[in-house]
Image (cartoon, rainbow, N blue to C red; front, side):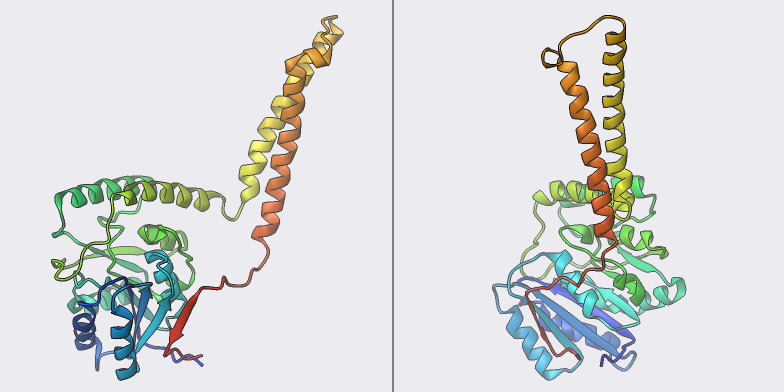
Length: 314
């Protein structure tokens, strides 16, 4: 049986072997004797010695847990796995590269208790390259405009949540960039806290320019799901209705012409085939919407993941 903690700290890891021991020590210094806590590392298919280092920590400290992905699945999948296994009343996420400062854990905990909602870090003095800062500003401006959520840094890895908030979301692909939007959609308050952003000491940034395009498509996915995830018939039914009505209009037009003595053999009239095609496609879209509605309302078993779990209570 799971023992509930005061605090769960979730850290995705990908090739961060040089940072892990220092990160663990800093986190422990800030939570030991203050909270009952667990530290969940998710090894995202690292090719260095990250897994071995974490396993040493697991064997030496019962508060440390490991989820080991056999292949690299990305930050969203890593966070999602941690969210599914965490038990703390308050859940924190931070990156493994030492750029997030564990000394601020206490401030995040206090803010979550005050707001009972998500608290997102704001790297006000961001120590990254100019190009990365510009891309971040554009991304955050667009997201603020579209979602009406007043955050300066949606993608900051340092966040804190009530346990209920993380249990209600399912993230994959690149949706970790939009966690505040997902949490907001579930009715939780959103606030932010200025954080100390430190320079990277070890390793290299996993940021790539392709994330700009991925982020754009993920945003479309998010906006689409927000509107139609639980009501697909509203999308497919509307499209089906529009196409069906266009087909009806075309066939009514042809019928009127026939009554007025204007008649063209159907097989020589493209409008006849267009009208017939629109009627058929309209019915098909409507049928797809009904099938999707059935799928949405079916309770599915949780997806299996190819991950191994270490030091978790059953």
